Image: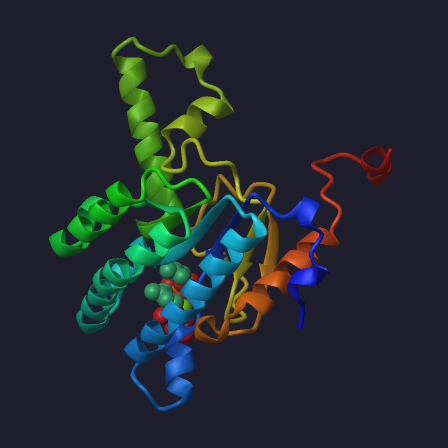
Length: 247
Ligand code: IPE
Ligand code: IPE
Ligand code: MG
């Protein structure tokens, strides 16, 4: 197991994104309901958030609920939304104590009003915190995000406020939900699934991907360190040759 001392402190990713997966299977293995897994996933969130703040990560984005997750049984969706409200409520103090700002990406309007209210309150309360930004992806999917970005850009063009020749990668960045947030250098997915599930497709163009068999409720800071150690051992070439990078 990796430890904090194994990390090269000058090479900590500025932005880490996590697909927190495997809660249902974790619960099922113990003969419990899926929601028991979600409840126990909160501990993993707390430990990961704390560890990231401690080692100097600037942005941590957690995939908490996807657009496609709306297709789950109503019972599970309700339980997840209730858990979200109670967790945000309980953890706002911890965010304040740790100087962490909360932000969200996703179609927050589609969330139950109680959820949205709790979320907006926590965002407002933590808005001046500066140590780290915790971004919760809620009712988020990359295709949703890109579609709404294209719609907004098209509207600008139609109104004559933007010429098509002016559209650059930066224009697109500005219209994504992640505007102003640097792309993640490292993307972690738990539970052994090797897929992206509609998460940050544009932003992970050059991210390092790390997959672990650990189920999300079992994920702890040592697992995070292990992912970062793996990241730090890689050569990021961005299309260049290895010789160019080492020169
Ligand atoms: C991740 O765990 C949490 C959410 C998607 C909300 P899952 O609920 O997907 O758990 P598995 O993948 O079924 O084990
Ligand atoms: C991805 O997990 C979404 C979140 C972690 C919130 P899923 O469990 O929903 O992904 P798929 O459907 O198995 O790809
Ligand atoms: Mg899953």
